[in-house]
Length: 291
Image 1 (tube, rainbow, N blue to C red):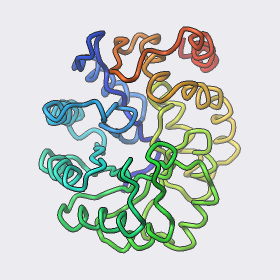
Image 2 (cartoon, rainbow, N blue to C red; image 1 turned 45 degrees about the vertical axis):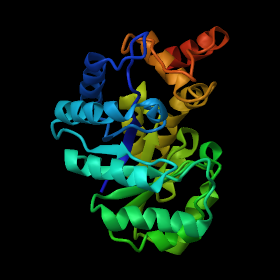
Image 3 (cartoon, rainbow, N blue to C red; image 1 turned 60 degrees about the horizontal axis):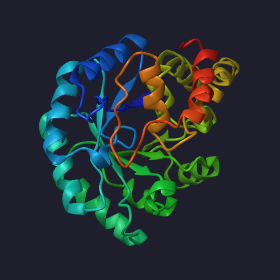
């Protein structure tokens, strides 16, 4: 249902941590103009753990109103609580989102059966298309391929975002599942290879700052134009790497601020990019013509 370069959108904030609606609207319009294939909001890059319950609906309504059908909108609704995830997923469907991205429950470390029952409960209760999200480096919880294969039998589970950076995992899932669901990379440095090996796209940090290049790279990879995809991806590799020089979304928010796209705000416990890394990120931006 979704493909290509899907931006894991930042949430612009002023210096007091208040959501900057004007900057958010400007970012959305820019992504439409630059060819981004879908918006993913309220994910890790959008600082979802620090977005208050009272802000979620407002933010999502703002995004959907500004998008006005020009791009698919996928909403991060996962949490460590099945009940809270269910509530957020229902809200996203009611407000008109196109799909939900649901991360594995973090911190409480469920078993594979617990993961299956968690995702099955959400899928059974809410009809909206759902994309599983596996990022064990952050959650301390790994959704194994065999469990993904069980979940792929549920009609409204349509894909998985795999952020392991392990291409063998993609091959393993495809062998078990075939084409029953779509596979999306959650790791920019390996995203091109992921797509060339059968993935449908990437949910990307880099797309925040280089949306046109990321769109073109993904389009080339999806079309099997490997030489073109490699050339474009080579331009982006330093950016892929340096946008993770500190925990995401610290570097990418600083980069967007430096580009004049958003204010510098970020919410604790995250802090603004350390001064020691400013020149590294600035060089990465300059090398692809963003500064």
